[in-house]
Image (cartoon, rainbow, N blue to C red; front, side, top):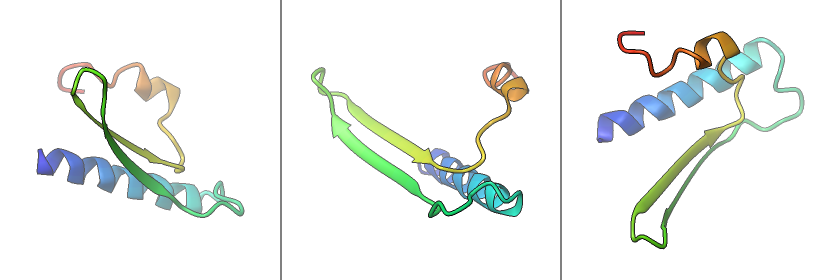
Length: 68
């Protein structure tokens, strides 16, 4: 599980770096936000968000394809 979180955070850093390179951050402060909570079903919920460049629509449609 540690490797999963490390990869997600590394991707967030890359997205912020790419947005900065492309000049799309403007005056925004780069952010990676990690929140945790326990929901009503007593499940742990972990959310990771960044304000980087985002994923192109053409790639979003294929994210869950095997071997993509």
